[in-house]
Image (tube, rainbow, N blue to C red; front, side, top):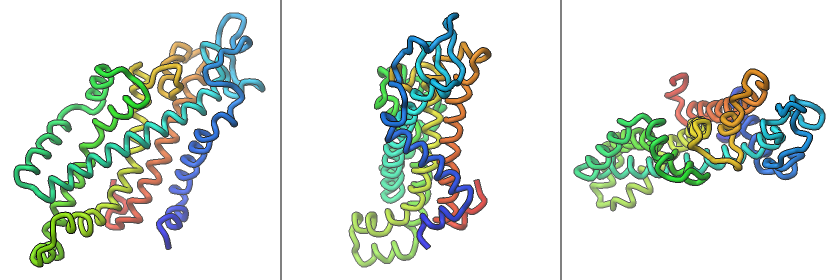
Amino acid sequence: MSVLKQLLARPLALFGFLIVSITAIFALFAPWLTPFAPEAQMFDGLTIEGAPLPPNAQFWLGTDLLGRDLFSRLVYGAQTSLIIGIVANGVAVSLGAFVGIVAGFFRGWIGTILMRFTDLMMAFPALLLAIVLAAIFKPSLWIVALVIAMVNWVQVARVIFAQTVSLSERDFIVAERSIGASSPRILFHHILPHMVPTLLVWSTLGIATTVLLEATLSYLGIGVQPPIPSWGNIIFENQTYFTSAPWLVFVPGGAIVLLALGFNLIGDALRDILDPTLKGKS
């Protein structure tokens, strides 16, 4: 049975897959699924007193403080979350895998330098480091993705380093060395293939962490900047209406939690399928 079939046979994984699939569909087809442009300020989008409108037949999820359709902004915000989640986590996993494999395979002074630098990066709280980097560089979609990647690669590097060290001492690797196999052959034909399951799991679970971190940075005002909609900056912009228009906070907040939950459920199932020895462990 293929990994995908095993994945879809698990109810929780299937639920997570549905969440991610629906979010991806909304993100990909946002121009055709939204009734208004995300930045359009509607003339009839506010009450006479200038307050946001509650959900109604015209504005399905209500409007925000500027009279913009919340549903449209939420759908376009899914694009932001998925782009940053996939790009940032892809860079983090690639960089972490490179550092971990090189340090674990060659060891010596190369491994020492790489892993001491990894330890140094891990000493800084991820959120604090992300805030500092985001404040130094002008926030934009791609800068935020790069900042998040720079704080998330260290965990991957540590895990891959430990696995590479363990694999390098296996009998089949020692045998390969004894018959004169080159380092590139050992790395690409024996070490790297064994890392694929771990990297797949991290690629999935890491997206959930990335989505949450992006939302946090946007909520703090140093993430993706308006007019680009982001679930985090939607909450940030409308937080003053938390008591009078709670849908402006709870709807995007619920979307963030659901998407993170979806990727976590898929990642947990992948971990159990690809490495049964880890089943039930967190």
